[in-house]
Image 1 (cartoon, rainbow, N blue to C red):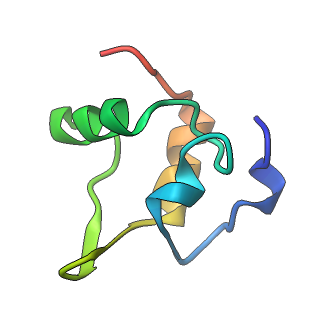
Image 2 (tube, rainbow, N blue to C red):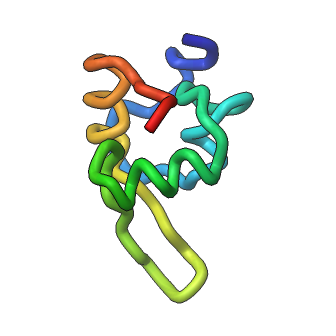
Image 3 (tube, rainbow, N blue to C red):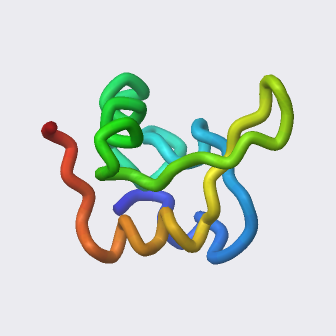
Length: 71
């Protein structure tokens, strides 16, 4: 996957760092949020009213098990 070596192994990441082209997950924003709602992708953490993050460890687990882009 592109950019995977630069993706952090721990900590928190914002959505722009998760989704392609900057991130390792090749799905659109709407597909990502649908997957979160359906439980296919990890649930986010809210750090503030306008700050949503995900645990990098959960994203790595998703990458290692294989990302499904179709519902």
